Length: 270
Image (cartoon, rainbow, N blue to C red):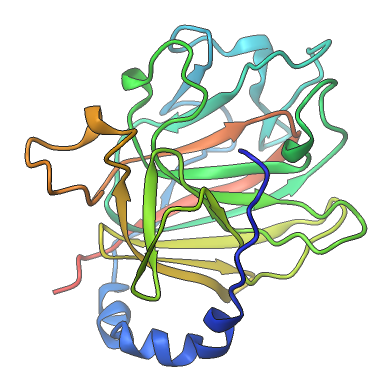
């Protein structure tokens, strides 16, 4: 999305052990006794997914950006002459609340011409997202919690599984954070290497990000921004917490491949 506002998470990294313990790991472990894994991507086609591009009606796969190639789900820009604001999202057909989402991805090739600088090797899983059909025609991004995927640019550090918050906020270490993007503690993944990630979602209570098995973010209370998401807040104006939503993959100028995307429903914590 926008350029990342770097917020120091040194305290998170150093004190993470105590914080995680305070978040009742025992309950999380018990809730992990979930159901069978669901393959969200079947390796053959885009069945069970919906497409929405900014400026286009629902189900218009603009310039065949989302496609399946060699058994991989691909975001491709080889049919574009240049980018002109056509941000896209691929939504899984049903919402989820408590689950683990696992995926293996890699960035490939070059950014499309005239794509914004911040979008180089940039994609993301939108979780707790509004539905595709509830987006307005020219809406760039669904209201959601974005689990941002970033690839290294060859020189500086650039973490992945960051958080961005279109029309939303989260709570980190007990404090409401309203900055748009917050960096995780992950290492940088340069080049076209495959990266495996896991997002563990416990409704409106807690969300955990893992990269190659390591916890790199742990936060709570995903919620709507009262100022910008009024149309999505329930009749009870004080209940802004987001307990469920759709999962979507972005198309924002960077070619990327996914070779697996699967989900395991979890039992809610007692």
